[in-house]
Length: 393
Image 1 (cartoon, rainbow, N blue to C red):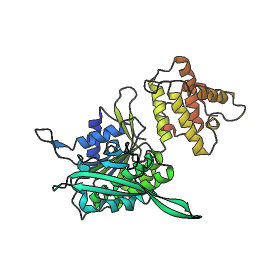
Image 2: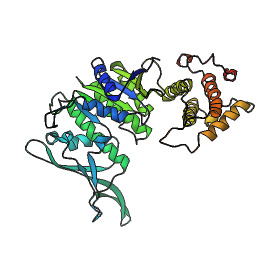
Image 3: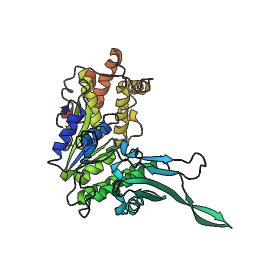
Image 4: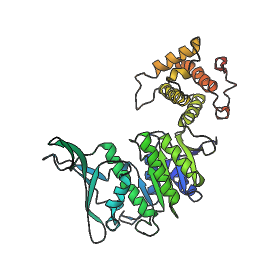
């Protein structure tokens, strides 16, 4: 695995990604939540903005999907009558400009029908210059009701859809606009030299994650001249499907932060099998070497053990810690990991691990790495560790 490449801040990393897109069409970023993916997407699109003396944006070059895109859609839940619930589009955003000529409702429907069973109607009103004046989405659902002893289908109008269904609708709305950008016969979104997509499937199950990734990859791969595209995610399955579909035209990175300097880092993962628990294990090993362990790293090691157990077909993470019933050290490590990964640690402020826990954590970590035959090249110095207790059994 290549060494991590550091960047002092997110604007520097965003600029690097733009330069990388001169050589590759697609960049795939895997990162844990709270690493800075959404902020990176914002810095990336801000680099392409041009403003006049009054601070007004006169040009841009990035079509993006992130948490801010989802905020362009807000609910009017009709609190007075509790009957007419509508998803409203923010008319101030250029995201919606000029959609009237593209039959956007039919485009969204053709995409949404792959994933959802509810219906909708989009009402758009535009000014003469193509700026959205008002946009509303009405949702409905077909339900079966019993009438005179027979079941019949009835359409319920103006329903409130679930958060997951809402996210899927917004994603399909974005995909419809992306399709317009990729269509060589249209010019409405030619200003978008880049597309940045951040975590579009945070609330999807694995089956839908695979479907979304496959469809997105197909759209991008089959386009005659796609723009430069960055896709960031914390979902390993979604990431791997995209890589398998796009790798001939892609670069793939693991995005992280240096535990000492706080700098952002990207590590090229193109040449190795990508499993996020391996990347997490390498990060945990580096953190141990740097002497910057915190109490939450017990939780991190347990999560890695659980994913490894699942990958190897075991029912419990303990099966990856203790070798058999006579493995007293393994039983001790299992108890410690079970106990210390459930402490009342703050979710926001890391707590430095005390020396006595560090003495338990290091052999636990090193033995776990060795007994599962992880590639030793990713863990320099492990075999020469000072603790004899970490010898491979």
